[in-house]
Length: 192
Image (cartoon, rainbow, N blue to C red; front, side, top):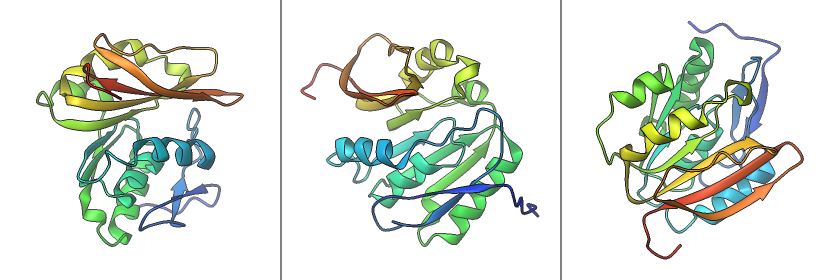
């Protein structure tokens, strides 16, 4: 049984069928949930492609990105989280949401898990690792073959870092806050 941590905070799902639902945030170094404003902007960009999408939230943390995608019409989401307690919070959230069984929570190291996945598995991936781990250069090339043709890739990085996408991906939209640069990329050469 997962223990209740009174110091844990919450983030909320900002749109879709689960709008307003709170997700628990464990008190962990490097855990930095994507802000409501950034998520709202991102999901406005993604609105046309979400229905029926297969989504990967690779460094899930609170699960805000993966659950938000499901809330707005994605068919399924795999939420990969290394931290045992955070993964427990994700499982609790999925169990209490009507339709939450569309979320598969995996407690694993992101790189090890990625290496075991088949190619062309996902339509959309969220990559928002702990900033101090500097994982983008290692993760993005391993992730790229696991993405379907015309897939989408969201990357969140420190405002001072560009975290370039793998070869064959092009920038669709980007934004910045004081602390974060967030960018949405599209695979392939089709129109964005």
